[in-house]
Amino acid sequence: MRVLTVFVCLTAGCFALKPRPCRSPPLLTGSLSVGSSDEKLGAFAKFNYDALRQRIRLREFGSYNNKTFRFDVLLLYREHVMYKIHYRNHTCTKKPLSGDFHPLAIPRNASHLGQVVLGSSSGPGQGLLVNTWVGELQMKKEMAKYMSTVTEFGCVPVTTLFHTNTHGWVVTNFFNNVLGIADPELLIPPPFCKDAQLEEEDEKDAANFFSLF
Image 1: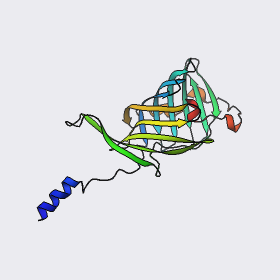
Image 2: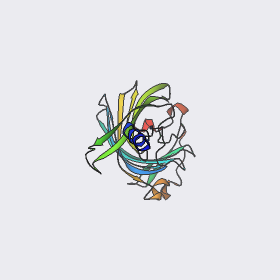
Image 3: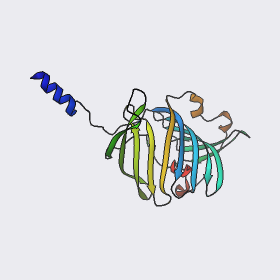
Image 4: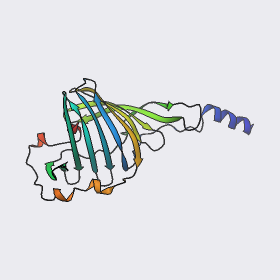
């Protein structure tokens, strides 16, 4: 009887754990691409992410409104400062950084949309088990709908969709993710940024993570 009960439990998924909202690894290095449904924005960036000390480094290039751009920025949320780094002439622009640090995570009030395998489930190593979540987030003066996909094991980000009134749907794809920070120096302002003066800006014009895209 016990054998039958165990068999029924296994086939019915008694031991399956329901996916729960999660937080991504605190130290992460990788690349991402960003694109908007209105076709105004297209960008590629390499990133270094440190949730422990609330620091993000982005080295990005792309186009917006048919104009190309390239920048290298270091966001220091604890100091509320953003450095625009220009290695070509060894200069820096130091600007106020608005907003709080938001760790890569699935919010607790998110709704689980489903669990799927990316790739193939036919054999080991052929697919990636992921969970997709939906919800809304406050972004400045508007609520933004989002749909975020992360790995089942590790909560590593895969894809995030945001919908805003300004650009419609904006999709971010994460790839080549590696746990940890290979070069910690990338999260420290270069020596030539030491004398950079903080530029005065109105609070409404201060930089934030989303304005970089």
